[in-house]
Length: 234
Image (cartoon, rainbow, N blue to C red; front, side, top):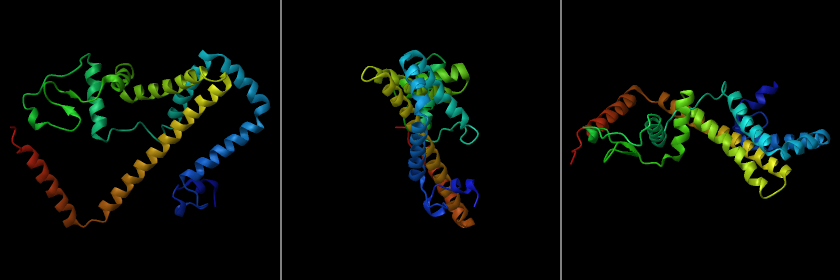
């Protein structure tokens, strides 16, 4: 058994060690704590020196988030929008990137109604502009709304240190900032694995359907679309 076979699957029944995702997370944190204890002699003075320089420490946490996420791009590329709320936020960010707060109502708006989007009195998202500002910044500067999300998350981790600095010592504030970074990375990995697993399960389910069942699904979809187009506007 090769070492990489241990990480082949995070489903306990398919893993050679019987480990699930939570077990690997606990193991990673345990190894990290052991490494920190062993390296405490030279790590603690360097960390204390960094923590006392608030500006440099915030810049370190900010850069760490970006570096970790960019390092994961070969395995987990830039996510694509999937839900209705994602498209609503993208609509709002595109509107802001064109230096508008709303768009004119379409002449045939009753045929383009969708969730989380206002058609009248103006064509716009239902959400507040706060999160969309970050998306618009990424779209304007980098041509990619996701870049704004990455920068906002990095800023959040840096501000966690700044917030904790007012409540506790510099060293513990740095620990809190690092925990924020680790928590966001772990949460992001679990969410991506969950969505990937759901997508694979949907593909397997579609693969087991017969040709008649697939044709029936296509007919149901066409009927639903035809019903939406024929809906009275009043």
